[in-house]
Length: 221
Image 1: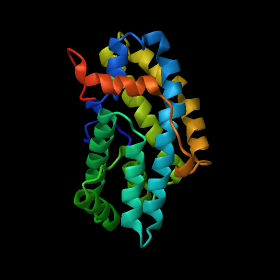
Image 2: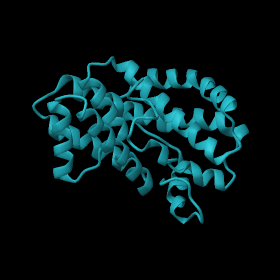
Image 3: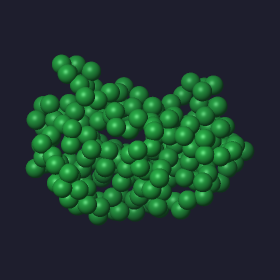
């Protein structure tokens, strides 16, 4: 719960990952938000959950080829994010998250991951970093994935509260209503490997690509 808290100082409140563009284009409104979140969890959430599990297993098992596996995992996820802002946003959150976990104790695996990514100039994606940190801290895998998915959904709902006429009570109901989709996405991710993972959300990808051209912006991405 601590790692998934929006108050964790990693910059999550500054990102909408293309949602701001969709709201500006009136493609996402309050009545459509629940359906949008379920679609997000089924596609983008599922992809991130699979990579979160892969990161978790790297953190909990630790192999001689850890550095190479860590870099390849992040490179593969970068290749599956077609928008520059999506890659940059995920990379910013991932780097900040892992740096935060590093400050919680003396974790050789976390420090090694940070060093390897810095030397290779590779991104550290949020889902992979969340999984790695959870594995190093000895958390339970399914619970870690659930926490990550809840954090992502909550972050989007929070963004919508600043972009749409969405009050706190309505936001709470919407987030509560997608809990079954969060659980189902977690369960699906347990049966899929990184090699088989996929995501198809072209409208959200377009929103992230369009974001730099908006006349006014509340969010970085």
